[in-house]
Image (cartoon, rainbow, N blue to C red):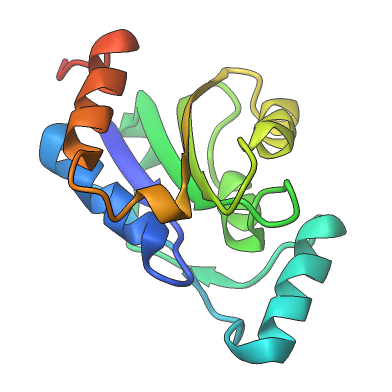
Length: 156
């Protein structure tokens, strides 16, 4: 079984996750960070928590990880690191689970984020990074379809 899991603070990553789910009709799971992260102080806390690799209290629908063969994880990049919500979620995933990683960022490619993911889960692969400003373009479905074809992400 394949699933798509995402965390989104501003809606950009949510938008990307929903578009991917339309093309790969896998169950979509939203990860909720229970910490207040909005506003000016929230931005500072977000960066601090990302830089120092903090975890956070999260909530998500029940997932039987024993039935999962691949998880598509989609996260925003904060200070070239995983968001605390995704870092916390990773603790639930068995180390041998295949992870396909996509991210949204302001200006970088998520390389530091992916290196962090690979350290905790070596059986992972980087699929794509999307700049936030490009997500509103009408060709996002075509970009995702091209990525699906390139990485052979077909429905099993």
